[in-house]
Amino acid sequence: MKNLFPLLAVSVLIVGCATGYQHNSFTGGFTDMRLAPDIFRITFRGNAYTAAERAQDFALLRASELVLQNRFTHFALLDERQSSTPFVWSTPSTATTTSSGGGETTGTLYGNQFRGYTYLSAQSTTTYTPGQTFIMFKPTSGLLIRAFPEKPNNIPVFEAAFLRDQISSRYKLRNPQSESTPKPQLESAKPSAKPGEGKYVVWKDYIGQQKTWPVTAQAFVSRIEDFPVYGLGEFPSAPYEVVGMIEAGTMLGVEPLEEVLKEAVQFAKQHGAVAILEMTNQPIPNSKGPTMFFHQWHAIRFVNAPTTRDSPPVHP
Image 1 (cartoon, rainbow, N blue to C red):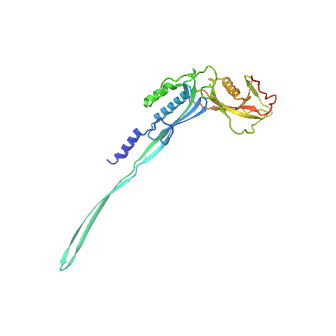
Image 2: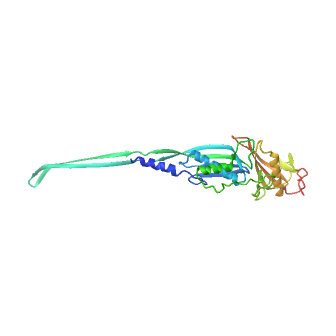
Image 3: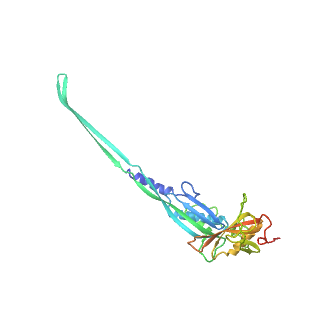
């Protein structure tokens, strides 16, 4: 009967102590990071009493919430990772000893002297109960997703609001945002309700001391709406300062890079820049669909009068 107590304790913990839907803490939870305007990474870590399916569901739930909070409606899985970490728990060993004993004395009394023998006997029994070792696993579910402002036609996607409601209902989670989420206005590439965000790109101000930024004697420069765009590894010949950085994510065959560049140029103009320099053009592995690319541009303005090659267009 004693051996049942550790098993009962473990059974109670498995039922009642699985990681809930929460920000990451010592008992587990979700973390997330925005890698580009429409690319997010989500991780959910469960404790040893959390089922792998529950961890995956909560990662998808967090993905759905992020998509809706940032005024998107659908998302696609770019990558998905499931793993588990072993967790070993042992109960202590116990030893119980019981003892018993007795004695007998026999002899002869001569006057005031007694001569005889005393016999003593004793015995003990020790019962050893070894500890029990339980091996459990802590699941981790990781997602890399791409969000869309409306449902694309050529790739499989999740509808964020529907998925959020389904998972919330399954685990009986309160969902104050279950009412339909308004669609963002996408008729133009104007910035969204959040400052610094557009349809494709995100703007980040540069704050701090200016560096001695690289320059070159020659460069290949393309133009978007007569605005200079320096390719990767190309730099102006005149000194300049960085105004800010523009970030974007594109999916091959889904968004034309030219449309993304037009919006990047629009943001650069709004912040007084006269050219943009491509700093990053990095492919992102995507096991679920078309190749993704992460882009970064520096928006710049010249410190002194620019050379003829670097002369920016005149804007009204």
